Image (tube, rainbow, N blue to C red; front, side, top):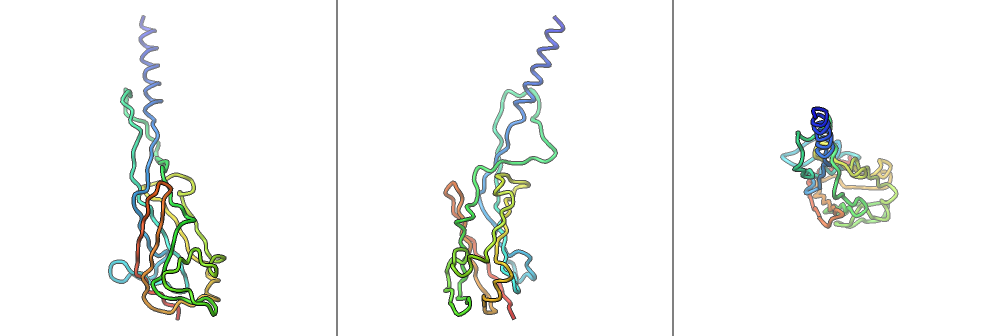
Length: 188
């Protein structure tokens, strides 16, 4: 009888541990857009870029855990929990727009043109999603770097001045985020 009770307690504990290690999920609910490797901060939101065009997106995530009410002990935790993303940013649909004209060779790229799909800039664009492509979030953020290679400045002329730069991101679950930052671009 004691062996049966011990076995049932052992089996119950094992089952409880297995079902208490439930998956952790998260989803992107907002973004933060900024320059990458910014040199100087002016006021509260503005950066200076000099001979570079690189940006970062931090996707803010909210967490939830599959609920489990039959556990006899607390849920199991690893030393670092990875959360599976339920949605992700569609990097191929991102849009980046300047509020003023810029120039590529003898061509004008008009204000509010999507630079990430512009025919002149296409070969210089790079996007590096961190965690987003892996479908996981660590520490509450999804991190994406993007910009243009330095070699673009052989052809690209961006007059030195303040710009309002707008980023539009969409997620696979239909959300759309639009963020603007003011940036001083110094190419002299």
